[in-house]
Amino acid sequence: MMKKLTILILVATALLSTHVMVGGDGEKPLMGRNAANRLLAIGIGKRCKTEDYLCQRDEDCCSGLDCRCTVNANCSPPYIKCKP
Image (cartoon, rainbow, N blue to C red; front, side, top):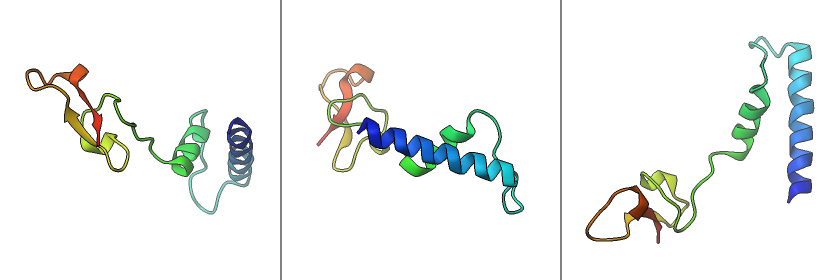
């Protein structure tokens, strides 16, 4: 897994540096240290939370899970988790 991630980062860095050097196709070139992070975020997408992780809304949880209160009395953050 780490090997694939390393290769992905190297490829993204190469593509990013090529885009910056060429100047893009009429677009503003990506600049700054966050450019690689933005590029990776586009490729990987938003990460979801798996079962029993704290959440605030259903969209935070992975597919098939909902953000639910795990106790009846108090629905504050330690008790709101992703559940099937």
